[in-house]
Length: 208
Image (cartoon, rainbow, N blue to C red):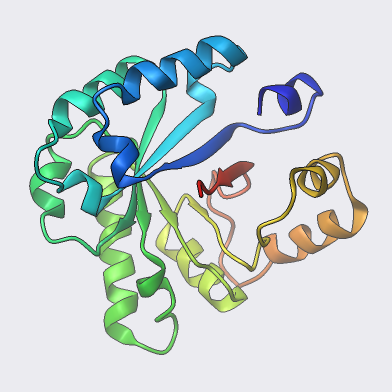
């Protein structure tokens, strides 16, 4: 991420998953601070994704860990939101910036009314709490159009791109013509007007 930004590639944020084991390590904040210092990457360019199950894990001082991470200046996102069973209880306590709607609900669009309603509820909840909302697993233009109508801030999924080697990603970011044309077509999909923020460049890096 640091190298790509130094090359002038337009990247705002790189999102990286923290596994449950990584999140529960007592030195996780210190480790991330060391990586940021070593690479020189600005903290605000890093977003850490933490699953609901990790936040609910026993034996972890979740609030202290999140506070330590937040103090570094990084952004925090709750991954797979909606699959846990204590969401509303912790949202008012934890210093998170973003909710990521689990793909199991996005997959219901447009065939299952209840799944679509859950997506709407999560988007509205995030807006009410001043949080960004990202929808996972977007694979069709119909899903994208519906999420745009709901006011979802951003999306990720196979419709926009599949996992790829770093070199290929860099080539696309440098202006691969075919990729740009495809993204333009996707951006214009659906009858709803674009929602501010949907065009923002965001890179998600999945940890092994």
